Amino acid sequence: AQKVTQAQTEISVVEKEDVTLDCVYETRDTTYYLFWYKQPPSGELVFLIRRNSFDEQNEISGRYSWNFQKSTSSFNFTITASQVVDSAVYFCALNTGRRALTFGSGTRLQVQP
Amino acid sequence: SAVISQKPSRDICQRGTSLTIQCQVDSQVTMMFWYRQQPGQSLTLIATANQGSEATYESGFVIDKFPISRPNLTFSTLTVSNMSPEDSSIYLCSVAGGLNEKLFFGSGTQLSVL
Image (cartoon, rainbow over all chains, first blue to last red):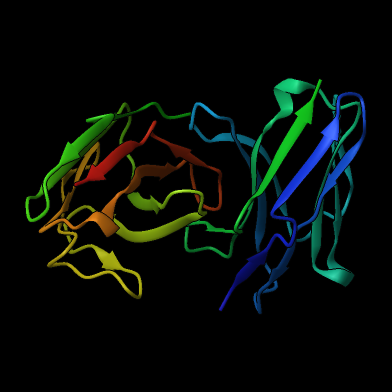
């Protein structure tokens, strides 16, 4: 069985603060893929990143960065200098080859001006 | 990439009726997936729609309640049958860009059952 846990239900920060969204996953497979999606108030799901289990390099894309640690089964997402437009629900997801993703429960991020 | 057109975008239905949601993809894909997102909740996989064979349903979802058609590699429908207020959710169609690739999502169908 596979499972994704996002323990933070809701986070509220003030603009320009840094914020980290936690994601912990469970799987018995040695090959798997981790994803982050953003769901803004408009409702569409926006793909942010995909990372495979053999690549533990951290990744940075603009104000976004991801920290993948197999030792703790975590794939955390950090937004630096947050902006109001970052307000959304963020989902972490896991794929072990079935092609369908297993999603975490999501973290709602509110960035206050 | 894949562009997914899903319709209707929203509907308000009466208890006991059925609604069919259509999903059209601009390219041929092997698997299509149907997800449900209940209010304020995460996405839950309903079933995988395979072309040329019956859909594969996840635990808690049955074909009688959520019949799925997949007549070709670019189209699928999901029917929500004998609806009750508990079926009020967003229903999303998605396809995989390739093996273990990201999923592309349709814009969703917001269903409200009175």
